Length: 430
Image 1 (cartoon, rainbow, N blue to C red):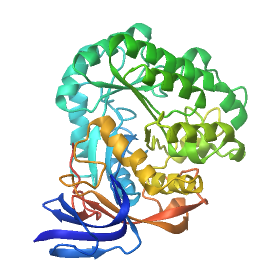
Image 2: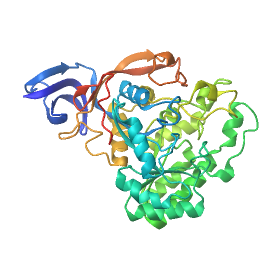
Image 3: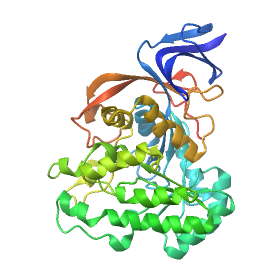
Image 4: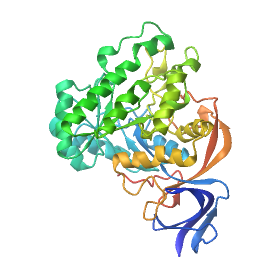
């Protein structure tokens, strides 16, 4: 007898989308059966034409707790994740206080998260000046890799790595086959915005700054053999060097984010600082190139870079406002809206937002509907439409550029290890 069987005529499986019955026992997927041959179970859910997806994996989330819990927190962030079909998040080492740059800080963060998470939660460590000796102990303590900046992070307690520090970190991380994830913008090409508007802000962070930083990371990854990953690619200028490096066998991957795939500089309203993020949202032609890079496999993952703040930090203009997009709950529907318009299917979206992020972090048992995996599942109605009301989101602060946009797809139910997610903290700390 199984605990649960979910049937759907649109189950998104590793080999494609087809009718299936997914059986769950003891929190894991016990078998995948023909739609009309479902085994006996204590509970059965028939989704009809609502799609059944694996739970999404978001490896780029700024939860900010402890220290800046008024920006976001584990309780609100994980509720938002579950409402958006995300069953696993990996929390960034900043903007919490203290940042996760040593084992003691990791213990503080895990203690803050304990008993609050409604989805599974893992943690990145940080690579900053002066913590080279802390990297291996953090790895052994269970972080999934290390984030660094090549340009100022926006918070003083998490400074960027200089050239020699970056190389030393790569050598150390390669020695235990860890993963370095990089915010890649060359500070030499960044400037203070020349004015308060979006055009001036965009001009202050040119695409060439991303490309030059990516080329630097590639060169050092080639030299050191480290596994490296480029975070939140916003500029299509990065695609050529990334593609060439991968052809050469350099161990490098890259991600982009829903806002770079669905929004464009031309449509940013005057004064709408909820659109500000770093690197910035660029033009429509650039967006089209990012989609081609994603379809061609140069970009591996689509993750949120959920980086919220309180509304008072998003004023008075683009020069001074905090740079971060709140979208954890909306990533799936935003990406599906644009992906379906461009001819992509749910299998593509699942690969970008579940399978590839799980593989990046080495999250065994996550990211696919496969026998033996955790029964992390999502009932997703791809044909339903909804208009985003920021006040109805689970994010702690009501700020998002998607407010008022009509998106395709609604998450009907999210299951974590075979249990429908409720407002009960049943997520594991990974």
